[in-house]
Amino acid sequence: MTEDRAAILATIAAEVRACKACRLHEGTTNGVPGAGDPNAEIMFIGEGPGFHEDKKGLPFVGRSGDYLEKMLRLIGLKREQVFIANVVKHRPPDNRDPLPDEMAACKPYLDRQIEVINPLVIVTLGRFSMSRYFPNGKITQIHGKPKYEEGRAYFPLFHPAAVLRNPTLEPQMEADFKRILEVVDEVKKLRGKAQPTASKPPESNEPPAGPPKQLTLF
Ligand code: URA
Image (cartoon, rainbow, N blue to C red; front, side):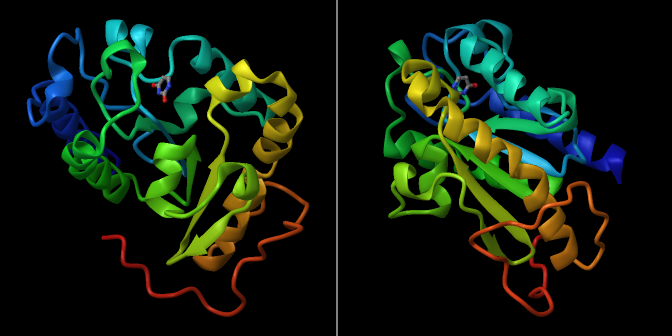
């Protein structure tokens, strides 16, 4: 299964690198499909590649990436243990916001990656990935509050770049990050294979009581 997942992700990555489905590939150096453990329990979804990501073909390898790695270290994880992807997989010119048709063109790639990895928790970084799962959500109100749905949690966090721009967000970001492993444990319980990795139960947004819904992920 591990090999199957890795092989399918490699196929998706090759398609992304060759993708011309929207204008974003024009003028870029590399597509940035995403990277990490094909069996990751936690998947992070950012916005889109920036300058350094475009040069290397890897997600979150600039300043935002340094900060993301620092947050991962805070909870005892390395980037190789999670999967990191973006809503759009080629760099928008001058780091502008991705446009709706560009996100729509990229959606099948991200959908397939999620289906293959089947993560327990999807952590959204910033408003573009958040809006996939929380269409009317305001990040200042919903950050750090998991939503449990069909055997998975969706956990909205600030984008690392927003925290770097506004360091007053740092304590909230750290507190939110420290909840990630609790959320993983809650989903394990929901999926019926509890193996606690954290001791404290969540204080808000309790997961639904009772048996998990039928998983519809494969
Ligand atoms: N910001 C993102 O949203 N994604 C990256 O890969 C890098 C910076």
